[in-house]
Length: 310
Image 1 (cartoon, rainbow, N blue to C red):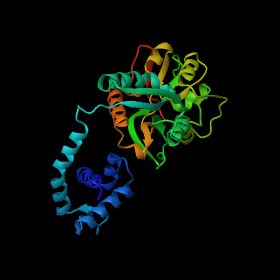
Image 2: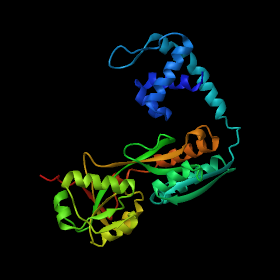
Image 3: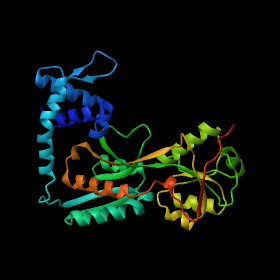
């Protein structure tokens, strides 16, 4: 019996469902279900009532979790005891738009907490970085997680969510999506990326097919072109300073706006790696200090919400 099953049981009881526990434990719901069945075989008794539409924990499940909670917490404290030196080299990929936002704070925290841990950053697209993690060329990568979830062969740990917004020229006065798209050319974000695919899906659902001759894979280039009055676009603004360099009108897309999940992805075999755990903790702390792009306000950016097409 693996000790991880007891931690998963505790997560199930705290969250009330296998799916929520799976999200915390970074496994699939089916893996949670399998661990619970293994626990039942180990105990020789049923832990859950499966007669209804929802699986409900029984008294024994709660008693078992209570008995194991203190030992599990003690083990975790021993693993994280400050006397343990975390050292080595971590090869980290970060999508280009997030490098100036996440890397400085992450590297500063790692140097403060683990001075003998060396971080070697690389940049690229989400698809390429994810493939490099699979191939063992990178240890981890901060990437945009596909809308329908990433590869089940990898471990995905969500770092932050970024709402996509529409950017329009500073002088734009149109008050609806339809009017904005009638008045300006659509500058697409590369449809081969997660962001570009999400933006295209949103526009298609709201307005139908919209033709466009311009398509770029750089948010900075797109915002600069929009600021110059050459069109409109739907992007995620990773770095708020971009809006100070290139004034635009930022338009919230409201309910149903596409939301990009940025996750730290690594191989499942490395889930217990101390260097990667240190990286995860530092990046999580760095991301918590980053305000959502959609709530960013600056003298150069006007924010509003469009009326939906009739």
